Length: 261
Ligand code: ZN
Image (cartoon, rainbow, N blue to C red; front, side, top):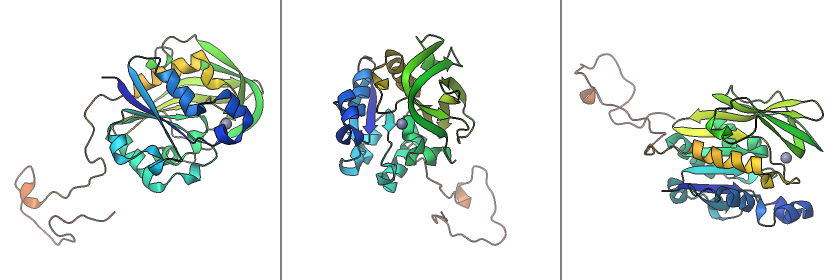
């Protein structure tokens, strides 16, 4: 079965900004989904902020293998309920890929548990991406470095935890560098952050970028059965302990009690 994939888009600048609309008439999410669907192993659909429950119902997430997230201007409009739902899906085994300005999205910050801040500049400068892990599945089929003629600069320090692997680093024309492709595991879910993708440039039309996105979906897919209740914290009664024990001492909780959160 193909990898069931959702490209989530904030879908704001595509409608409000003439440059972005001309570059991405079907939205950034539409362009990214089209790139992914060139891989017969991927079945990509889209969801947007404006849809009911941002297009990410419990049922839809349960049937999703990999979610891609692009957001910028309206991180605060994403509901806490959907944020928690997305994080729980990741902990249960759904893969997730955060793109560009999604470094400040609610689900990314929640999964990283850190500031996720960085330095930045919007000057259309050249970005050169270097493969730092050339044998990584996400780097398959790529040259050892490639360039984007116009991009926004993101610079170090990037306020994220140390990743499992750094797949790319970027150098910018103005001199800064940035860890631009980072992998994490959160619960049973594979997480990838990929830096390029400022909406006023044609980044998602670039063939190397589209290769990275397809590779990343294949990498992030965890075919194992999802964990049913990834946030469950069950109380194990005395008489169900793996070895027989006798209860001793005072206790605070009653049998079967949910416990504090
Ligand atoms: Zn940007």
